[in-house]
Length: 347
Image 1: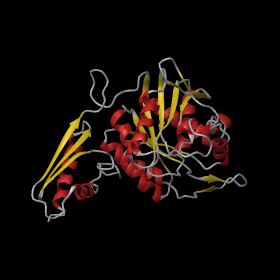
Image 2: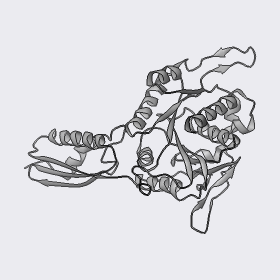
Image 3: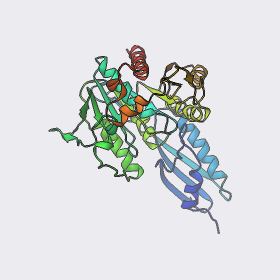
């Protein structure tokens, strides 16, 4: 008797990764139907993309995975390619109504200060006179509410049942941190996370913005895939630290955006160095030059090297990003410089 069944087919297909991501096509929900007739297997997949290379790659790898099972006679993989949500008359991911530029701030791993960069970038842009919003897309580990001192606030709704963002320091904010009680975890399965992400992007009354900064979760998972497939991004900023272990994961994030045709605006090297207040000596605690070398290798700009300053951590913990709390600090100066470069690049 053949050991081939729907479960074994699903298991075989779970070895096929979505190009540019660490998640497989089954966990992403791309598998629509499996039919097993003796030794013959028919698989139906559904994709939302305008990149024909992605469909070709998945088709080839899915077919190979089925044929490698052993005992398979005929392996048929059919892919229903659907165009992502589009603007009227347009092709590709849709713009967010009223928003001129959407910028994703991403990292390949956690702990590199991505949210700190996103918060201070948004605030720097707002201080320059630009209308700016910041959306915390890290549903499981939101931190923007804390960094802007709004953990006790709850969003309200307008007459059209859209969420009214929280305002802090001239920045419009939305985060799961505004919806959860202190210490409460976001216990959600993948489809619900995708739904919340879409609500934060599409059902918030952002108004007319020059910039909407998206603070993405670390890695290359389903939230990132949802965003790059459905939102027209002006570009992405990659945050890393100088050491090789962080750069390895930063390359994965850069590769993800390259495969989904999102331009990388540049690299920010956070925790770049520490200057001792006593003698003014510089210490390269996490190594030196990693960000600049990676930027040169990938032919993207190095947007800034943010020093290690206790003020940055203290400001974030007390709800006033360092650009607002200590505008004359070295780190604040770097963040303002990054904002200027982004503004020049996009306008």
